[in-house]
Length: 112
Length: 116
Image (tube, rainbow over all chains, first blue to last red; front, side):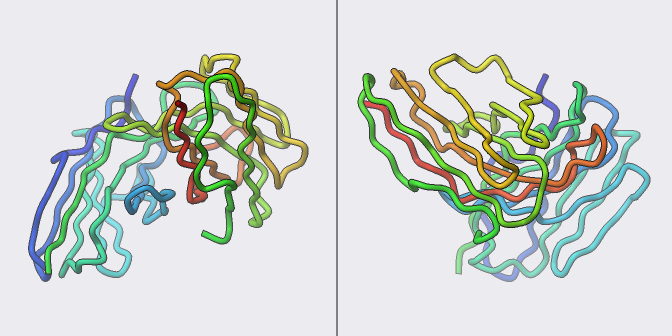
């Protein structure tokens, strides 16, 4: 079963604005991760938040986790054109070996 | 992206061809993965190798055959593919701790495969 589902599917903003993406998942987790993918390239790990953490920061990124609602959000502040990419959440799945299961992603377009 | 490299970056093959994708990781990790990424679909995990042993095969058709000769190299051998196999194939690596494969993964740039 698919774990993470991102919302919205697509987001278009102007440079300098903040971008918020949400992720919902279905089962209990040990950690949740966010990745970025530039068009046609590999994914790049952004941040990992553990199930006992509620908020984490990394530069212009802020991630929150609400395990009671089984949801997470990724906030990118003061966005730049270079932030244009797809963003995926990934959770350790509900099957053996605690593998990562990725969602379908949010496509972010930041216009100059 | 220099941590995980993939070759070739682009591949066009006919349905009767045999080709191989190569992945190499320079991070000292002990687990490697093949993923398939098709348009508008979640990333699909195909195979997982941990300590050079295949630990996961997600019902992948036999026309895809993985090989992991050592902890740094991973291959995906392709034969008699179908047009629906056209996709971006991504390799990744991570450090496995016990049974836990859920830590951050490092991805290669991918191979864009087109089957004609």
